[in-house]
Amino acid sequence: METNDKITLIIPLRLTGATHEGEARLSRICGMVPRDLFDILISDYGTPAEHRGPLDALAAEGIRIVSHPAPHRLFSIGRARDHGVQMSRAPVIVFNDIDFLGTEAMYRAIHAEAVRRNMAANLFDFFCVPVLFLTEEGTREWLSAEDGRKPFAGPLAVADLEADRVRIQSAAYGSSAMVVNRHHYLALGGHDPRFTGHGAEDYDLLHRLATLAPKGPRPHDYHSDYKDNNARHYWGFRPFFALYGLDLLPHGIHLVHLWHPRRREKGYFRPGRNFRLLKRVMKRFDRAGIQPPPLAHAEGGAGRWLVVYRTGRDLDLLRQILPMSASYRLLKARSPADAARKLEAAGRAGIDRFLVAPGVSGDVALLEARIPPDIPCLTMGAPDADGVVTFRDRRGDTVASGAVRWLRAPAGRPVMASWRDLSLPGLPRLASGVIPSQQDAGAPLFESFGREQVLVGDRKSRPAKKKKSPALIRFRRWLTGY
Image 1 (cartoon, rainbow, N blue to C red):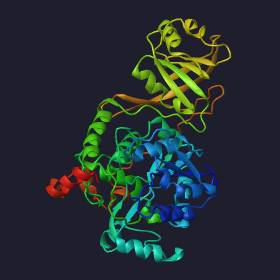
Image 2: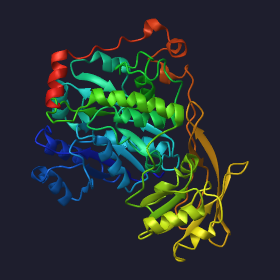
Image 3: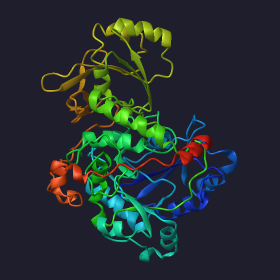
Image 4: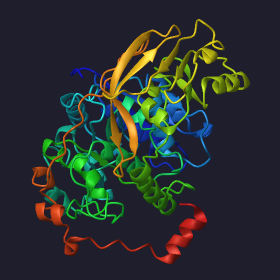
């Protein structure tokens, strides 16, 4: 990744009458982000026509706006983010919610960190930009200060942030402001679409990203949520995700979250439902490797594909390949003859490329005879003893080959095949790059937790789980939806 390669900065949103200072906050973000290093993309998830004015004004200024083709009546920030990634053009993306903000220097530091890690080539590397959630007073002070005199500028320490409770409500070190390789994000399937509103959806994605590239040992009682972001207690999943942002604090890399009143929009906050779902999907991924299907790169992918497969292992082998398409259809079949029959029923209109997975064994010529001769058709062989997969064309000639490394869930189930170096005809080169090494408990990264706590997990150091809101408040939120 070169120093001048751009990153796509994605702002996922739905503007409504309940959006606090929507126009002003969008304007501030677009004014602060350096355009020589970032492409700004606003991913709109169903803004009503009467509230589209700020978006239309930004579009007139050259800001790219993409609208989700089928937004649900309940806002889904996960689907808004996913659509933004599918429509992005840069190899690396970062999420910037409408209430997040930084100075130009902060954004330049984020870009420099992505360049330092060569994230365009190292697919599995990612980091979270720490986000300081400001109080109302802290927000006023931050906005009123000149750019060179903003509070919290420069290197920060956990203890300093904890001490400043007047201006800082809390800090999220493993935040939703993720900086991720676009291709890897698409291969993982993005957010689970069952999450709605705002809350917990980013933890599911972080769980999968971090499982494939762990930065350290998992905390004790990992699947539990202690709702503790203080980076002092190594219990539950939050401190594990915090590892992906904590080492950036000394380098002055962070954003702030501007204060706003609770949004009075039905279905926007769904913490109870979403956190119950989160625990289930995290455990299911660890046990069986189950995750959303890969997303296609709608903006820059190579045409519309039809993929014939038989087993889940076929899909694991294809997970890194499918994001090279602009869209794809899956056709499950036992054999080429079975696939040919199903193809006749389903139709092949609009298909630009056919790909047959190894599990579909038999005479592939039966299927190829149903495919127009001008459409490329590749048949994959099963991985050999060295993990090498060959690709053959209609004539049976080998046109490409590549070695894979199987990545597995904690219980041992394959999650996906990581391609070391693959060049398919007419498609970009696919190479996974280097997976970052795990750090041991004695590394400076774990200093705020304490080495002994990370290794032993003394129950005395376990944080108390926060109590639920009073019943009356929970009933009111259930009744109103916010």
